[in-house]
Amino acid sequence: MVVSSAIATSSFGFDIRYWVWQRDEPLDEQELAELAAQRVDTIYWHVGELENVGDAWRWKARFKLPASNANGIRFVPVVRLVSREKEPFSEASTTGLVTHLSAASAKQNELQLDYDAPDRLLPEYAAVLKRIHQSVPKLTITALPHWSRSDHLKVLQASVDELLPMLYDYEAEPILRDHTPLPLIAPDKISKLIEDWRDCPKTWRAGLPTFARLSVYDSNEKLRGQIRNWNWDELCLNRILVAASGGRWGSFILLAT
Image 1 (cartoon, one colour):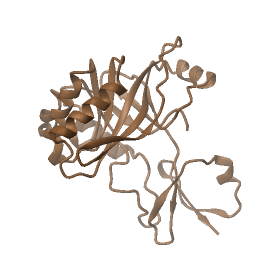
Image 2: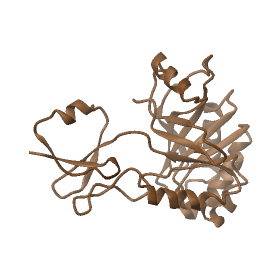
Image 3: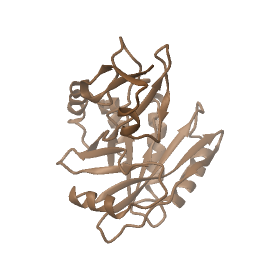
């Protein structure tokens, strides 16, 4: 996997941090040198995904957290939470979740959770976060863009130390509209979202994409998924791929002939 999956910039200055997702191997010397050149001192490292079924939380995936090293980089464990249950935060479920997360963040000063909580569950989620916070000195969470609303922030802000709104991929799914590709990031939309977050009383960091993505659509213009392992030469030098449209904000459509 590439070293960067997104970038976090602080609301109080230009402070670059990255997420690293689904990776076991440590950063190599070239990656460390690039991060040092950018003065990056914190990496949010995905250590696993917890899935909720009934009252039980189980690890669906695990990844090794690197040790903070002499290069001055601090690694913060990030746990992704996934649940399709209507009421995922029962007393038994919450107790099990706290136990799992306490073990995952043991000897760490900070933990980050990534959970797309439905609006109806925000009060329950905030209560769970408060319990989790008792076992870790600093707790941060990713946030959906519309959580900038004052009523949502009022529910969440007492339970966490920092919020990181993910300002991309917030629409239901990327689709083709009139043969125009949907960009990962559009300046007018992002400017509006950032403006909405300016009144947040808590420290917050804007999560922005820094990666290139290859998506596959069928003949009905329906998204079929993304290809993980690819390179630019395979696209640019492939004679069966013809540029059909695009270029705005770095998004292109290639048709297979």
